[in-house]
Image 1 (cartoon, rainbow, N blue to C red):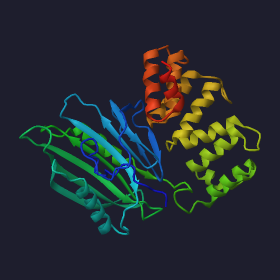
Image 2: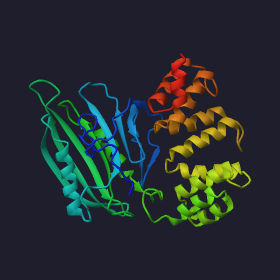
Image 3: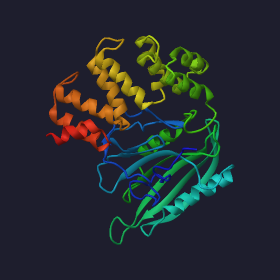
Image 4: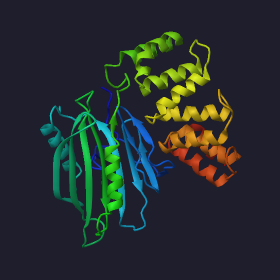
Length: 355
């Protein structure tokens, strides 16, 4: 099983506290242009909170961290989601409850003191889940004062791989003020947006059609791969659509069919597949099977860039820099190229070194 913990902070307290086991440092804040849009992960999809002034701190195949800018310095808000394989097998809700509490205990420190923890069993999208509310005191904000940190979350056993736990949560540190009803509503909508999808074959077994289609692609037998994927495409499977779209666009021994590829990419985009969002941007940027439309290309690139896709961020920067599909804005272009460089894009790093 190739599931790994990228950010082990399932209580959504990541802007204030993170477990020592965290395997990846949080990155620089990246703006989010399309609140409410779907983001895809291994085995699940969530919609970005539908709110303004959001920024991402992390986005990987297994997890994400999003914050919201607020006017008051002591008022902070965070949203997290991810999938983990518990160290100890979890097969029922009682064991899942203990797993959640263990995770909370791991993130306890001298700065945070738990005040209350409430939980309830539920079902979500066919999966057994536990919803919980946790109140802690943040003792490190001001000397002699404490600030409440309120976390609401839901952790579910994945319906297709019960040994894996999917969590979604939001936390508010309100600086001693009453928690915002508006933000609470946004957080609850975020929890409800969780839906489960199958895993890619390199992550979990049980997807022979996808694996066999990959093997056919490697053998440059695109027709065979498309035939294998046909039953999944009839069920609007986003993984199958992403692969089939690439077969049509790239070829793999077949004649290219950009119109068919675009149709399949649009299907995969509904599950927030970042590489597909970027590919749609490429199609519109270069006029592949569609009239060249830089403004539409920029829209798709920004959707992928929201998920910290470095090539999409680099392309957004280049379009602003060159005034392609948007008014020229070298400062905005520089901002996006710096984000791409921060997220590992080699051309962006080279471009910055030349300046």
